[in-house]
Amino acid sequence: MTSRVRREIAADGTELHLVPMPPPRLPRVAKRDLEQAWDAAHAAARAGDAGPARGFRFAGGPDVVLRDRDARVWASSVDRIADLSTPHGISLCLRLLGLVALIGDAAWLAPFIDLRRDGAALDGALLTAAALTGLTATGGLDENQIRSMLLPSPTEDPTPCSA
Image (cartoon, rainbow, N blue to C red; front, side, top):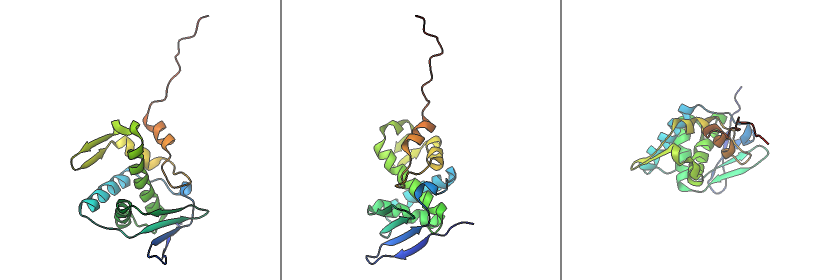
């Protein structure tokens, strides 16, 4: 049985999603879902769409508030395609936002991103890693898990040392 995510409107007008589990317990998503969310978010941003002030209150914490206009637009686009009244929709939204944050912070991801005039194209392996990796306690993507999924691990030299 799928848990529902209740919505409330806070006194300041913020749409608050009451998530009945902590972020690490949210489900993984399919790569195609994350691709659709990426495309929908970019289409909404290009169209100049706006999104409401929005926040997520997770069982046991934390509270995540989307103050950035772009993040609100992206969350609204995910709501239209995946429904933020479900754990799947919340997971997809956090993964999209986490992916955008990671792209901005992790220079090592450059080989997995093709910057174009009309946006960025992401390597399928990066999308798969973001879809399948665990979420942190604060709702972000686990960068170490993504790195381990994308980059080859150093192997031990099979040549024995001679003394």
